[in-house]
Amino acid sequence: MKRDYLLNELGLSKEVVDKIFAEHGQALNAEKQKHEEAVEALQTKLDEANETISKASESKESLEQIQSELEDYKNKYEETQATLDSERKTQKIKEALTAKGGQDTEYLMFKLGEVEDVEKIDELVDKLKEELPSHFGTQTEVKEDKKEDVEIISNPLEKGDSNKTYSFDELSNLSAEEINSNWEVISQSLQN
Image 1: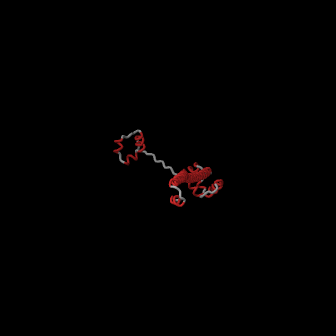
Image 2: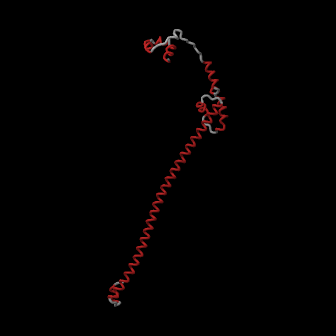
Image 3: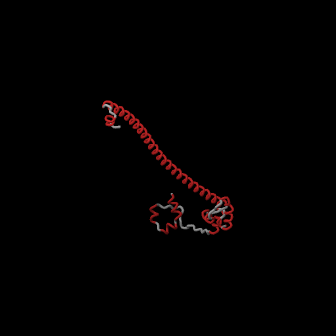
């Protein structure tokens, strides 16, 4: 609506036109105020929504990080469990070998190879014992076998004087031959 239209076309007085425009301006200002308040309320809601989205994004990142850490711990647990199971299996095999008189368990485990079913270890050890009987037996049997192979030579020192003792000065003046021939006496002197 234009002022000229009201004045010239409708023939209203200037005072009436001013009052109409004043009233119209107030109505426009009231509507403008309502819209500005609505825009401010929407802006506040938009800001809150953006903040919520930001927090949710951070929470999602935190959740993803926690899930990643949880997966790492799960993998470490599974690795540790596998290692523990392997060590238990090895220990059972060593115990079975030792119980049957196995002497060199590391070598015997090598000869056994990979044991799939630990429950059948006794059968496998019996079979290995048949194949390698020399690697099985008690410690006493092994020591007795070694004693038979060893010839003990008695070599007493005849020249040594068991009552004599040597001082450090005297020892430093002895030759290698004298030390060898009197070693028992010298060793006792050193212990005293």
